[in-house]
Length: 434
Length: 162
Image (cartoon, rainbow over all chains, first blue to last red):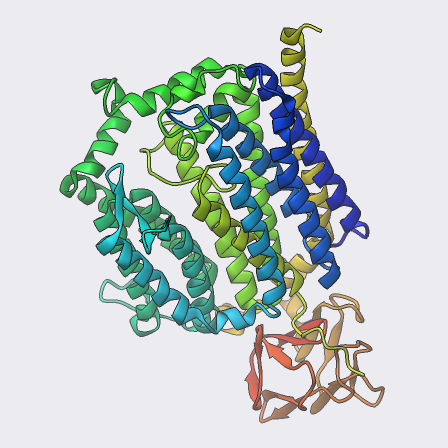
């Protein structure tokens, strides 16, 4: 993957650079809040863990991707800083920021385990049906026994001990399933037969397992009233079909299906209908349902071009600012320039992931990397679009920035998978001949 | 030290630092893109045979003989064309028709056979395997125009004659 000879050195310098950014951000918010600067050890722990991870991964292989970790490092540092600055809702303590650091450390460890444990990415491709079925089962369990928060059932409790968001795990499993299925059957999906309407359509018997799995997921999301996840999964499916067949028509059909589906969902489920009417006119109920999007808009406006400065805004007024609406806090305190920079960081992560996809020689690896790249891109577009009132608000986390154990851990596993694909770009294994 | 000034300077410094970071990463990214660009162009060149319905332009005559094009390799030049005769052996040792001096290639690695204008690829139980379109092959497989054949670090694209 690495075509720059001193890629390792570039990565380490960039990680140190990200530590500098994180430290400056954290110290600024400490100064603004009149707190001791020593709290900045939190961001140092994050970057320290990532540097250790980078060095450990170098032991295994030298053809590793060298740009993803520094990008993620900056986002994680900014996320921890903003969580610390927001404090916990109600108490004003900083437990969320400290827990987030622990999640990031755990995520880093799981990324390392993925990198070390997965010798050949193709072995993951063989588990495609297991992954697909597990995704559907997880989502089904959430529908039946999930815990409802804010009108949507997105949480599953394990032995009443840990709660986690199955959607985050399901998106990884779905990426494995779609990549594995299309790597096997891509040729067949490309074959078309004329339908009754005279339009070329995919032969149904080859596409059926794919359609079935996607249909199950979408049905569950609709029943869970989780429009954001539905949009993410449908978008992922369309992108993968486009990659498999090279037909742009899927995009048009997919968007049409989504709009029709969303309208039906809005008519049938009051929760979805509410979100759409709030989106169109948040002023109808400014102190109730419209409160959150309006506070986000006020935050965007208050931020202006350069922002209020970390810790100096009033981002703590936005409900759920620590997870779904964290972008509003970024926009208020770092301003337009800062929020564009965050958008650029997401763009670079997706760009790099697509680059890994097109450099991969193994078809499954390439499709998996493309799926993960699409997930990162779509998820950030859907969440940020919701905060900016470009699209209706949907409850999802912003990768690496929002508070959330499942989200952080799953995104780090995705990062590990991307690095495995970047490493395995040579089709033959790593067993030199004599 | 006036904290107000520190906070304002720090705010601008933070934004500048993030942008400098973004620019450095972007440039590193584009270096990789530029390095990969010749390979990408190579990949797009040959179309799968079933897509080419219209009569071939005259310039295509030069490539009318079946051949392997090197898509990328650590031992051969990308874009190099290797004509195919009756049967072509691929391996690390010099007696092969296509010699790949690559640690990941077995001494006798694979064989391409021609029967009645159809092309078949066979793997000689090589250590690291032979791949067609990313899939390892076990038995003889027929190869078609546009298929990618990977042996060690080298990827060929098979181009059918016309």
